[in-house]
Image (cartoon, rainbow, N blue to C red; front, top):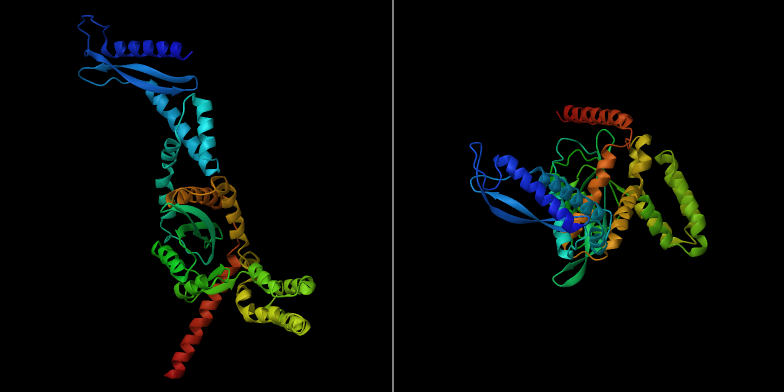
Length: 387
């Protein structure tokens, strides 16, 4: 079948060059446009195998045929399919097997990897896009650890990720960066990079209580509030509680965090302290120490609180990355990790930006205007008093 197809396609090529030159081989005619100059071999991969075509050469010009334009479109479709397979967590070995089945030819592991590198400029452009056109009042940050080969060894690397809620209430993935850990210096570099890209208008940052992360937030987002993730906070409290009391304490903690206002939350806190101080002193100590940071969201209007109390949205994002990353296991280099994780986040970001609005920001912006007027009035009053 492959040999038959070669013969047919070569006959088509000869017919096309004859039509283009307006003369058959060795034919003398006044309409002749140019002369043949032999042939060149052109390999063509098809579903029935690898074909070698004899493409005519023209002495003073270039032979053109739509056949290769159609081939190039098919090749692009194949490359896009390969990249989509990689993004969806299909291993290189499986990609090779699928290509061999479809095309009847073998692709080396390095060839597939090279093809997939076509994602790099797309991921880089998205990850470095300008953020200055919008405000992001709320951002959520988190990190996950993955394995990357560096210097001939497998090393753990932290993937730092930031998501934001823009002024219209839609979520966006703001960017990712790979670092050696979650130190204050690493998070500071990440936040500085986001701000250089135009991140502005941050009013609340939601994260866990990793020391390096919290310190970096305090430095780079002065004037914004920090919301300690309540899910992580409860977990930390229960770790310090005797197992026999964990269920009861957990139920009481939920009542505190679901309180309608801070006054009610503080009354419930006092009751929990009195009830559990004797049986779980270390747990109560942690609760009192982190209470204010875990309740920072209560200063905001009620419609936006629930989804900003925790980093659960980031946890779901991490699970989606893990689902794709698990097939790879160990990334061959840092670029491969950025390529796959970045492509996954691009896909999620596109879905979010065209999907449902995450938060209704109407009441929030009304509240912000009232806050700004109050601050301005107090400033003017202070200024007149000093005068």
